[in-house]
Length: 315
Image 1 (cartoon, rainbow, N blue to C red):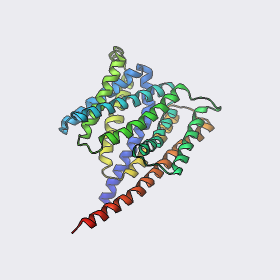
Image 2: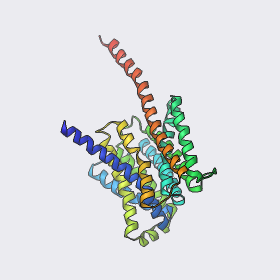
Image 3: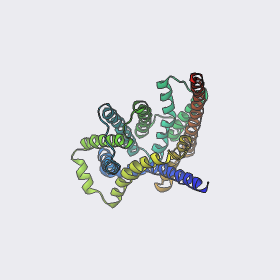
Image 4: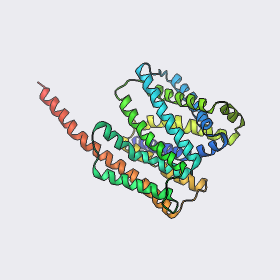
């Protein structure tokens, strides 16, 4: 029993670590993009991530997907590149605090898209949480008065929409396939690295040559911790805890982003912004909880029907 509790504690701490590094990634990306420009920053991040993931694939003798699996992985790489590109351009033009909070809208949007894809509508209470999240966004970006979102905020909101599409597509396109997960992730990272290296062009090697130790620290943090470490921990920890528990722990990402932005970067957030931040985080948690309960309630009749069918089929 103690060993089981110890394993659970380790898994919980590692998942919190993933949420923390993801929350801190907005400030690191903002600082790096200010030095190199957005395309070079994202290109360097994914070149490092792809190299490290490639080494993991070699160590684990993981094969790359082929045929349709390769096409799916490349397509998901394109959508992932769009997410990170919009997110990084957004945080370059807004605060790390705003970016970390606004991207959490994907937690509310993803179940809506999954419901549409599976033709299973969510309960009304979920949409109450969604409206609360939208109100929170309005308060956060209003800066004391009603206005349209700033360009950076709008880009991060767009990144949240594309992230929700990416997550939904990942689930539906890879379901039932036998492709190795590391191989699929390596293809996605290679697509991102190649895409942004081409966009950056000659500015990428020039930017890399001009980086100081602190800038390389941001590159390694984004490429190794926020990409490779986060993926490996998820793969390991989710097998040792429940998906619900994992989602709750990793859902603390916007809280970490808020802490890093205000404490380390000294970014100010007014009373209305603080209220908006609280609404976004609360709505994201409530939406996740409602979606989990809805999914469990729907799965019970299906499991009962399967059991009854097996029972009647038994001679």
